[in-house]
Image (cartoon, rainbow, N blue to C red):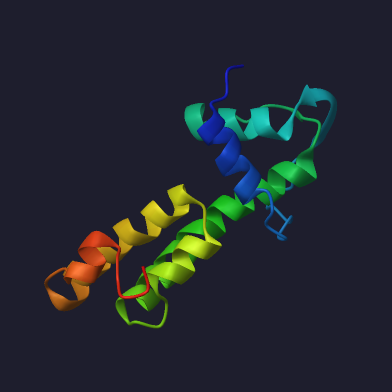
Length: 127
């Protein structure tokens, strides 16, 4: 199974999630695929492969679900000037930064009807 470096990076990031409880629980298969392979198959093909690392897979899947909420919360705080570019760039990988800044542009248009220049560029006085 060919898994890109970007997919591995996302898996590594999501699998740091402390929430490992999935409903329904992921079953253990001694001869199953790795959590990374199962995550990749689930994300790209919608397949649920037998997994030999169900706890790690649960963390990654839960981390992906929490990611959307984190991105939205950070984007709202960025628009509200509670969170700044320097903090986003320090605390999140580049692909997460792009998600946050992209979501901020969407939310700004919805909330205030236009996209301020600091939101449009992702740069502010802290950059």
